[in-house]
Image 1: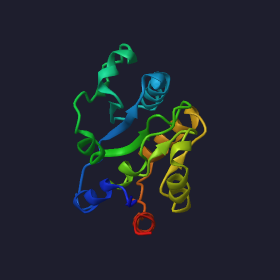
Image 2: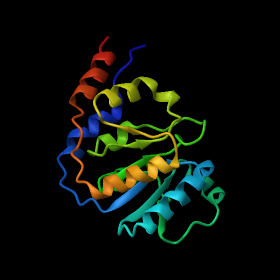
Image 3: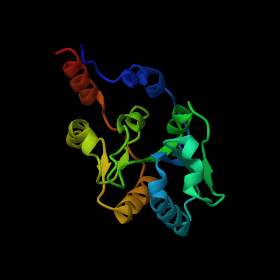
Image 4: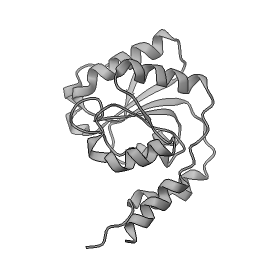
Length: 178
């Protein structure tokens, strides 16, 4: 058995070269258990009158009905294979699974599009990569919904520099070549 770096890193050059308009917040790979997170963040965004689309991409589109009725200003991606399209236009990305004890989804995906992901406290299933990303200032980890809301607002108000992910990629390739 040979361990390699994540295959999604092979997509990096194609996406890194894109000059894109950042016109949305993306709640990526969200679970029905995080509906309250989605609603509180949406309320925070609207309270501050941030004129950005909010896109929610469920982790399991077949469980979409478990989210209940969402407000019409939360746009929901219902098709598989559309994550890249949304991440390419994201101003900020909140990674699902990380706001309840399930464990977060892949924090590398937003990073491949030059977006520093916002994750919650439950990233125990990606400990190594989250530690490496934190060292490179390539991730924003928050303790609760209120901190996440503040970070979303910060991301909107400040022109964020894309994090340098070269050391992260090099480290992952090094691990894959051992």
